[in-house]
Length: 139
Image (cartoon, rainbow, N blue to C red; front, side, top):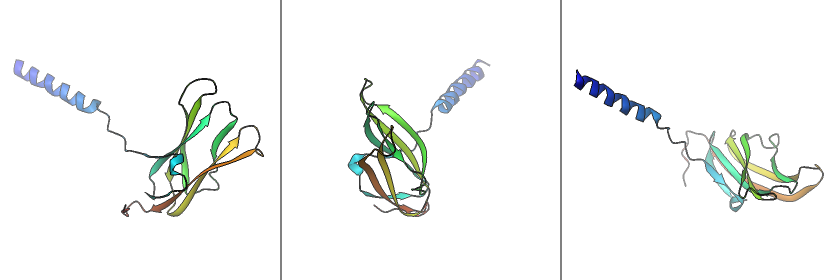
């Protein structure tokens, strides 16, 4: 009886350890200003991030026009502090999903929060060659 109890306890512990582990999330490609104007191969329905620098209190933020670029769906947009100080630097992080096959440009513009007319000339642009998810993409 003691052996059965010990075996049951050991199996319960092992099962709980296996179920407690979280599966690792798939790696997500991240693009930065260093990747600007690059041409990238990607598969349909893949997700990726664009991480661009900004500064708190400057009055300018990166923006994405979903109606102009229907090949991409914006899944998430967040800010990440580099230095959490007044006027400190931040990253704006956009997470996209590829929704259209073919050659798709993606453009983010650096716009004023105060006025739609006051747009700085900065823009981030990258080009995607989108293949179907069942087509292998060669390097």
